[in-house]
Image 1 (cartoon, rainbow, N blue to C red):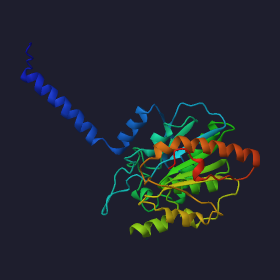
Image 2: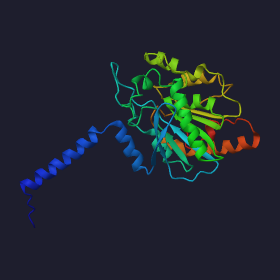
Image 3: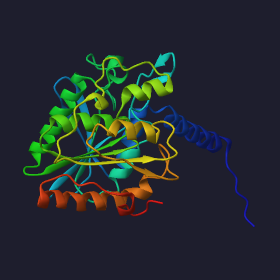
Image 4: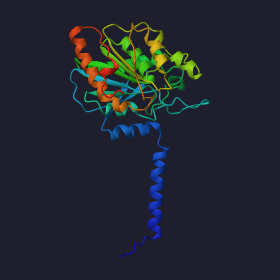
Length: 298
């Protein structure tokens, strides 16, 4: 039996290196952690200039065919606590990055203004990720980036996927961008006034509420999926907001909450979305899905 001797110098060098690496990970900003997730998933990275802000965009390496999918993430962490605004609101839980990794269609994740490392830029005031997170300047800048992406992929049609607060942005952007053919929300916060009242949050006074807008155009495909156990955006809130969308009803799935289980459902949802969009092309009218048409739903 051999003996293993480690000198004190080697031991302390190893201990220092291990501790240092742990601290690097623990102390990394949300932006750096998000970027690392994107890199680990094999996405490329690009910066776009919008009308007022810079935007980080991550893309998968798929070849663009008929459609390009645009993923819009959650609000992230606008506030560290009720009295302290976050210095970096970038999402800590990159749900939409993980969903995009399951997508076989050409797709991009479009970051919001002042997220993903841009929060300290001169044009980035905390209002842009708090009270004005769905305001006209935010929508104009995001719309400019989406138009640039659409123009880069000639003749492609665009589908917007919005998770949580990204659902509000998807609804508001679909209203103003004629080349958008569909909008899909997951746990979508599409009535920001009801949401703020429900949680006793400060109202988003500078933001536009999707629930107060006119119905989206009839030919636009809509799918809204919500978890029955979602306490952040409860199903009745979404159901009431969608009554303004000419009879569109959300799909409510048992045993799913605000964060759990979207990755299990996502491949089936994508297949059905693609099938519905083919119908739209053939029939030139909107198509809706039922719960039974989504594989993996309980």
